[in-house]
Amino acid sequence: MTARRLLSVAALFAALVALPGCARRGEKDADSADLVLRGGKVVTLDPARPAATALASRGGRIVAVGSDDEVAALIGPRTRVLELAGRLAIPGFIEGHAHFAGIGQAETTLALAPLASWDEIVAAVAAAARQRPAGEWIVGRGWHQEKWSAPPAPAVEGFPVHDALSAVSPDHPVFLLHASGHAAFVNARAMELAGIAAATPDPPGGEILRGADGRPTGLLRETAEELVFAALARAEAGRGAAERTAEAERQLELADRAVLARGITSFHDAGVSYAELDRLAAMADTGRLGVRLWVMVRDTVANHAANLHRYRRVGERAGKLTVRAIKVSIDGALGSRGAWLLEPYADLPGSTGLATTDPAEVRELARLALEQDYQLCVHAIGDRANRETLDIFTEALGSVPDGRQRRWRIEHAQHLNPAEIPRFAELGVVAAMQGIHCTSDAPYVVARLGERRAEEGAYVWRKLADAGAVIVNGTDAPVEPVDPIASFYATVTRQLADGTRFYPDQALSREEALATYTKNAAWAAFEENDKGTLELGKLADITVLDRDLLTIPEDEIPATRVVWTIVGGEVLHEAPAGPAAL
Ligand SMILES: [Zn+2]
Image (cartoon, rainbow, N blue to C red; front, side, top):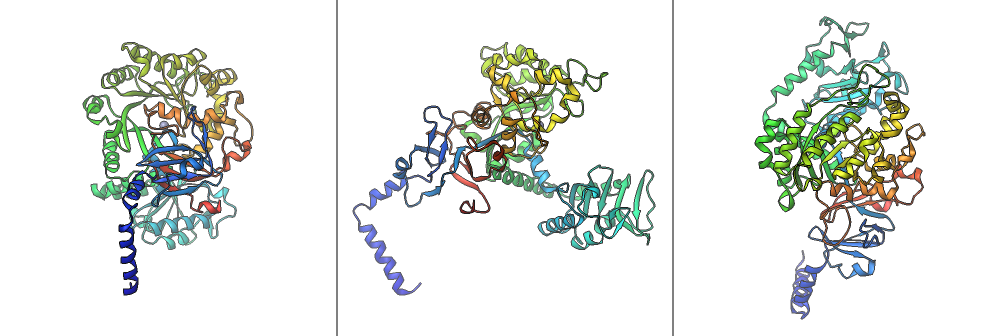
C-alpha cells in the first residue's frame, strides 16, 4: 500500500468517526438482515401468508416475509442478497426416511451400471485414484459387459483384460463387482495383494480367467472372488481405529454434501446404533454437519434400556442432531417376499412372509419409548405387519393420557388392509411413506399381492390423506437416490419408467406432496415450531428451485434443479453452474 493511499484511508476513517449518524448506523447494521432473498415466488405453506416475493433472515431465523419493498429496509452493508429472478423459494425439503451413513458409503463406491463402456469404467477408476490416498481400495459395482455400447478390446470370453485398468491405478487395489454378483474384475495391485498369479490354481467352485498366455485377465468367477475378499478383510483389519474413524467421518461428510445438493435441509435418519450416534454427535458438536439430522436409534433392547435417557437431545441443545426416536423393523420387504401378509403371496401361495422381530420385543420397545418420551418408529410393509404394529401402538398409547400426542410412526406403511387406513388418524400415527418406492416397486406389486389387494391397500396415499393421516415423504436412500424431486414426481403422478401409472387415483396434489416433504415432516419430528413453513421466527431453512414445481407442466417436474440450499440462513449449496447460467 502506498503512503498516499494509507493517508486517504486514514482520512476516510476519521471522516466516518466524525459523522454524527455513525453510531446510529452501527445500530442499524445490527438490525439489518444477514440474508435476503427477493424478486421471486416464495411459497411459505403458512396459511396466514401463503405467498410472498421476498424473505429475510438474521441469526439463522426468518425476520421478514413479504414484498421486495417490505424487505428492502432490512438490507444493510453486510447483508447477502440473493436475486431469485422469478425462481421458487420453498421451505427446505425434509427427507423423511433415509440412511445418512449409507448415502456416504454409496458415494465412496463407484456406481458402474450407468457407464456405457469399459473405457468409461477405466476413466472412472482413474478419477477415483486421483482423489484417494495411495493404497486405499477402490470398490465399484454394477457393470455388465453385455450392456456396453461396444465390446472391450482386447477381450477374453467377452470380458476385458486388466492392463488398461492397472495402468491408471498402479497404487490402488481395485475391485469391481459384476451386476450379477457372480463375478468380479480386479487390477494388478489387487491380484498382488490377493496372491493371484499365473501359477495360482483355480479355487474349487471358481475360476481365475486367463488369456492365451496363461496370465490372469483380472476376471474372477464365483468363489475366486473370495481370494480378493480375504485381502479386503485383511486391509480392513490392518487399519487402525483412527483410520477407520477418519474414513467413516469422510463418508458422513460426503453424505452431507450429497443431501444438501438435493435441496435437503433436514434429514430423518431411519436407524443408527449408539456407536454411530457418538460419531454423529461429535460431528454435529464440532460444526461439521450442514444438514440437520433427526435420527431414530436402532439397537438392542438392552442397549436401549441402558442408553435412551443419556442420548435424548431436543430443542436448542440438539443443534444439528436431534435424538428422540427409536427404530425397529417388524417385517422385511415386498420384493424379496419378506413383507408380512395377512393372506399368502399371490405368486407364492405357501408363504405369508414373516415377522423379522418378535412382536413381544416391539411391545417392550413401546414400553421403553413411552417411559423415556421417545417416538417409536416401526418399519412395517405388509398388511399383517401394519396391523400388528397398530395393535401394539393402540395398546401402548392407550395406556397413557396423552397417547395420541406421541406422534409414533409407521415407516413405509406400504400395504394396508382397508381396516387399518382410518387407524392412523385415530391414533395420531404418522405414515412415513416414500413416493419413489411406489413407482419403482410397482412392476412386481400386482404379482406379489394380486389386483384386489394392490388396489385396496398398496401405497394408498390418497386414502390415508382423506382419512386424516399425516403423511411424510422420503426416498429410503441409498435404496433410491436421495432426490426429493423424483419422489415428489412419483407422488403426484405415480408414473413408472415405462409411462404407465400405478393406480393414479391414489396420487396427491402438488400442494399436498410439498407438505409431505416440509410441514408434515416437521410435525412428524415435533419440530413444527421451527421448520416446515416460512414464517417469522422459524429457522431460515430454505430451498430455491429453478422453476415453479407447483405450476409447470407435469412432464417438466423431473428436470427441476436446486439452485440454493439454505440452512439457518447460510447458503450451504449453490448450483455449480451458478444461478446466472440457469
Ligand atoms: Zn429404510
